[in-house]
Image (cartoon, rainbow, N blue to C red; front, top):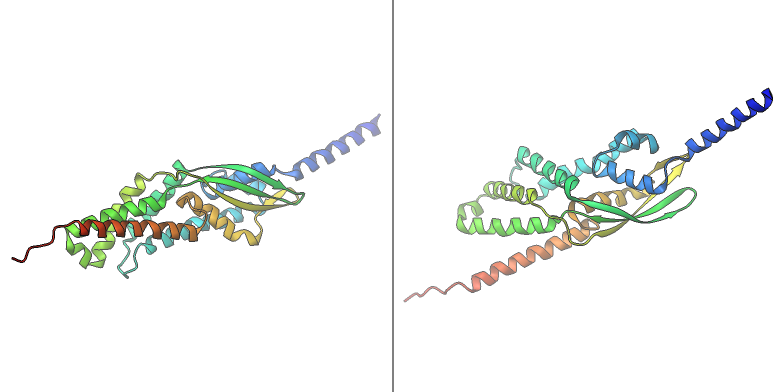
Length: 245
């Protein structure tokens, strides 16, 4: 009887150990990854369920920091000094809007014994439309006050001021974009393979821009700015021609 009792305890211990090593499901891992990457939630759970979770979480946060560093600088191509305080507030506001307004869902999970390829539908912010409206308003202001157009610093400051308003009222994209991410699992712990770095970056940017990657966003932005340029030309064509007589 005693031997049977000891054997039962050993078997129970082995069963519990194997269950613990199994870790969370691929679906849960896919959701947990986005919650940590984009919304910066579930830090403790992520650290527990992903391999080297604390360090991996810090690496994911680099996506946010890199975006903050590059976004404001990208607004100025003139060499004018970027107002750091405004730039910091603007990027933080955009990231906050991302957390409040964007949504996602897992639409497919192709799972194997060692990992899973997860397909997401992401409904992100319509950053291109915000930039387009900012450009329209900036053109109006520079036409009304030519001094702004002559001074690179004033132009940059006006850009930040207008964009701040647009970001606070930013809308989400009408249609979601589809993205894939491959996660692998070892000894019950999930992790992101090194070859998925670009996929992680694209996933993060899809929430902020509503585009599947940076190239797609740049094309959409170029098309939007071309549309504004055409509107300006059309409006100038409708102005009366001055009479020299």
